[in-house]
Image 1: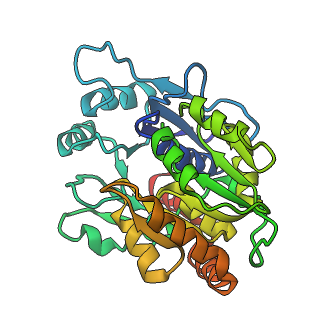
Image 2: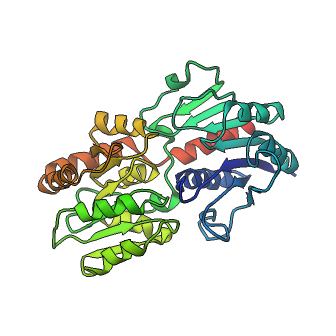
Length: 346
């Protein structure tokens, strides 16, 4: 009888953090489960009661252990995560958290369990066995300054959700499609309202704003109800992949959703408003896969409006973006990562 292979996945999500880390870990966990692994999540989901985003493709909850904030010492950090790893007798721990410092990784290392870091930045010391950086165009050279045993990085390992992989890829510009606006899985209501009110008007093109259940919606609902024939607000994550597939254009942040839109092939405007997404800016500038606006110093309506109008007025530009996007992201990153982890730690 084969031994159960368990992986402890330490990741958080919520209104402030967004859901990108949880969702990409979920996608990897589902691929690992197909290879015989039992994934166990440890962290906060920030989605109220129940499993939140941590369900499988049939809607069944994945095993999730919630961090106890009332613990006496550093709940959810290195020593605490090492304790959980020992209790559940896992073969490996994967950490996807900016909150983990070098000392936390060292505590896990001292527990004698191999550690994987899912990282975006390359700006902290990672005493781990394996680093995964799924950002396109990143190479292992980003971690050359430290002694990481193995690095899997770049667009070959970009993680796309299975629900998105089922959406048909665009064969070209979706002329009759909507304009989809989505700025992340946290509480993005303030910036989103400013973006929506700055959009140029196109009576023939519906605008769909999509937010997570963690986002405050009262004022956004007023925006949608003011013109229900061409405005809609979605807060159901289950239909978001279909909304991406129906979009002709998109306005998005620089997180996980951007790579999913690239897989499908949706030209758009990227708003860089989080300072940890500078790698994303490099991808967009080098590959010319979207129009990019840096709004970290503040959102300005006029440059944004001009970017949207430029995209609408130039179908050739949009078609070129689609071709470059799909050439960059093939959607097989989670499968490749799961196979690599299975081969290394089985």
